[in-house]
Amino acid sequence: VNSAADYSRYLPRTVSGRGVIGWTIFGASLVPVILVIYGSLLAGSSPELGSAIAADPIGALTTLLPTWYLIPFAVVAILGLIGGAILDLYSSGITLVSLGVPIKRHQAASIDGVIMLLGTIYIVWFAPNFFGPFQGFLITLGVPIAVWSAIFVADVVMRKRDYHESDLFDPQGRYGSWNTTSIALMVIGTAAGWGLVTNTFAGWLSWQGYLLWIFGGKNGPWAYANLGIIAALLIGFFGHIILGRNRITLQERI
Image 1 (cartoon, rainbow, N blue to C red):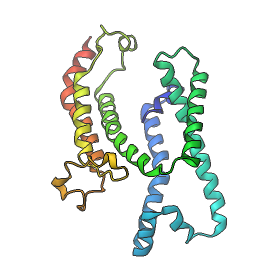
Image 2 (image 1 turned 60 degrees about the vertical axis):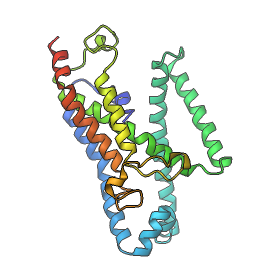
Image 3 (image 1 turned 30 degrees about the horizontal axis):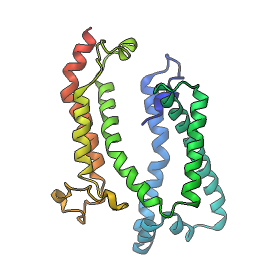
Image 4 (image 1 turned 90 degrees about the horizontal axis):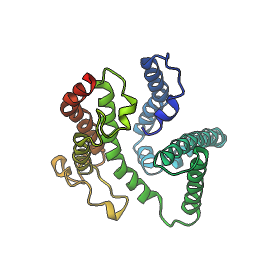
């Protein structure tokens, strides 16, 4: 969500936009779709195995796979994490520079890398319980990110012209300084999304799920379905299409 534009800007202008989107989605979805289908069949083949996978996916798979398989699995997992970390460092470095910090991009990425290294050392060797609170943090953060990304997608879908670059940096330009409609959608979508997720990984996040009574409560069949993410996406996307259409039309007439 947050780093695609940072490296897609290196593509030639002559590249087909549909081709970029289509092949990216295809490449990113092919393996996960296969793994999800295979994992679902595997978990459904045995109730005991399904329970074990739900509690500890890696530990459960080690009981089925030969020992030598752990080597290619570890290599693929490590390379995937390294690739993702490199892209995240690149994106975070650009973000730090865009905030006005007077340093070069590689210096900003280095600072972020040091922070990540120190955080990893703390998590691995010092934190008594990290995974639970961190997973709760991801759920909490995922809701506003879902609204935010849906608003951007809807905005791109509705626009027939490219953004006027200079006006993006001009408070008096056609886009203005604030888009109050999008901010309101962010607030509404986030509030609705947090109300429809169950977050039991940290005690200080137990207040979430206050709207799940509609679907049977926090212990109901839909409690762990992450309905809040879906609600946030729908509110952001369709809300921006309905409320932002006239604004975009006026901007493109200038």
